[in-house]
Image (cartoon, rainbow, N blue to C red):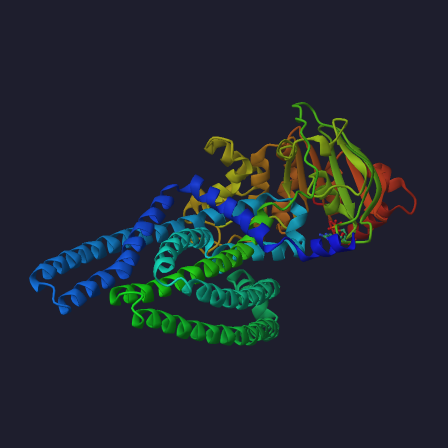
Length: 616
Ligand code: ADP
């Protein structure tokens, strides 16, 4: 039990990771671009021609020259030499052409595969359960996946090239072992022992490097945050007005310091092993040359054989070391790239239901719902009970931190309840298919996000399945009050938001952004509209317009409306007051005002001192 737990803590073994990655990336390459395998065949032929030339030609030439020196007719042998030279030139030419085409195409595929992997990574990040987006463990894993899958591992072609090299070196090794076994058999154990020691030392270095990579993931993410995210122009106002640049740079430098120390520790540890490996290599070379020379002097082999054996010994070592190195390199690369697989296979945090959501009027019911955020000990909501009938407009009020937004997050199933259950049409929402269930809600969160696309695209994103429908788009923009603003933009609806990607891009005001987000929600045309503080950034006139048109805005759909402005609750059918982690009061405005020492009445009266009721 203890041993098993220890193994689990250590994570999967290197061979397991290598096997998984090889399978994944070979399949990846096969599905995305099969022709890359043809490029490796070309590379194989090019390198094989070149290696054969270096192995055989010197032996053949030397044997011809020695024969002439020993008295054989020079002219006859000269003709043979000319044939050898012609073969060499032709072989060299072919070899270079094959290698050039192969390498060129593999480089091209490298860029192509990297783009495809980034696409997969982005899709995963955008579709994984929401609660993971604020889980530091998952964010670290995402960072490891990004770095591991691209520059640390060399990407798909980095791993494929290692695999190809292993196959090539095995073929080369078999060829030279055959030659050496015939001419200098004792050379084989000398090379193998030398290689085994060097491999052992390299494996030690590899473990040190992988350990460094794991440590660096967090530092890299924090470093990136301080030096890339924070200086971005969206943060420009805050960093200047709070004069925060010095403090931020200092914090960033702290992480940079950690990174440099980690690299330094790695360099020291690796250097010791590299020195030992160099010494073993020098010793192995000395023994090999002595042995081959000895066999030639004793006339066990010819001078031509001598040159071939010297080349074969070098090639044997190169192929053996190549195989060892390639395996190490591949396991190392797979160790990094495996982080990509871990991220891609991150298990769902929420149970996925299979039931379809029926098309009918929907009744929402919270039954004894309690909730605490993941990795938090404290309940944010306790025993919440509420029923929202189809077409009902519910207003939610409460102090900051009362749990109003959390209530919405639970309803949208961004999180699952800790206790109790939420039912829609009498069925636990966990039983529904996630995609169909989410289609029930048009939500504008307080911290909604617009994207660096055109205004039109930002709104149309609300329903990507809908065919282009300008009349409908304009209608939703008119409802939120954004239509008039859009007419004043340089390119109207086609104006790109934000300035980062388009010279003619525009930065909308907070109110315009909010109106655009409301348009997007309306464009989705879902049966339940949820507006979380939709008027926070609006000027009083625009806010008044939203209240005035609220019925128009949501039509006959159910609506949940969170607001701090209590006067705005009046146009809702019911009001739920969140306090003490639960629904403390529930009823119409008139009913709640009658509750003696009621939270709502107290809040309403306090606000009434400052505001003239805009809806009156
Ligand atoms: P409200 O919308 O009423 O202002 P929230 O629902 O946003 O309140 O927050 C309720 C409580 O939950 C607060 O104490 C807040 O700090 C906490 N909270 C909100 N989001 C998270 C989160 N992702 N992780 C942990 N606690 C959170």
